[in-house]
Image 1 (cartoon, rainbow, N blue to C red):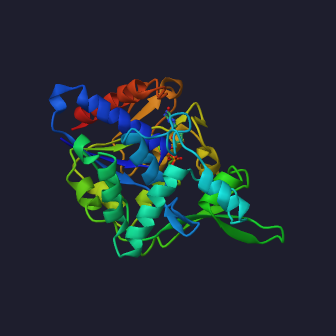
Image 2: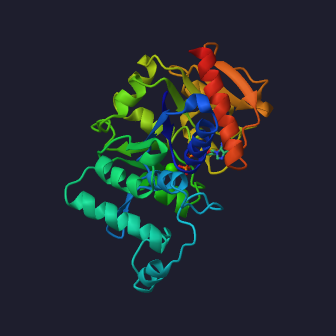
Image 3: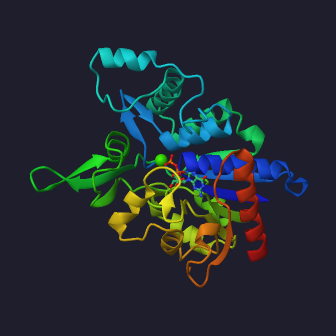
Length: 323
Ligand code: GDP
Ligand code: CA
């Protein structure tokens, strides 16, 4: 079976790790492969290096090198390079990278500088983390350098756009977002293999990633949304919101400027044109959902890998019902 998942960073990576566990535990799934299409709207150039936060969270989580408590960055990390940059007064001071993590960004930037595409650089990093051996292919949604920006009020009564990372990390998403714009999106082509992975999949899964700045960006790359509408595979999603709140992060602050209710039903509405199945938490079982979407409720909290595997299994079961 070929499974394709669209993913942001921490929420998506934890779900996909659970999916791999669910597949490994089930003899019927021997030989199944997983293609992960990762969001690149969070990407940013810092200290002269190209940083891809969501792809890196996927690499480290699926490769067994993530800082578990944080959900991103490397385990057993030190921060000597960052301390030196701070001593040198090199901005930005609000984004911290660990020393091992720097290695990833140096290598990626070197390869990109020599003319490699982001897909090629990601493939080399995925090899380092053993992803092909686990039956996983990690594709950036596009090789074009796209960047999500957030439009906020400025002090002079006008508007200004700041990079998504500045809004999220520096301001904790507390500055009200007027809207999101994604630089480069309209001209971005899907990376090699992305549309095929969606069209030729047996199942497409939408992990509980941020619906606006993770999944929403992937859906905005020209051709991706149409591929999802047109695929024969059932498309099954997992709500990132439980009882009207994100489990972590600020998805509610991202939904507000879209005028979409922060709820499992609100997010389902965003995906209505392409969604076949929707997993919601038991707390949200009583809400009303788009008529064409088959809804199942279960405990949606990924407390650990086994919990994520349980949710992934429910997604696969619902997809099998829909096929
Ligand atoms: P990011 O790029 O690191 O922000 O990660 P994602 O976009 O992939 O995922 C972020 C979303 O994951 C947030 O909106 C969270 O609400 C959601 N999330 C995190 N942990 C859980 C969980 O245990 N269960 C569910 N249902 N959603 C979760
Ligand atoms: Ca992200």
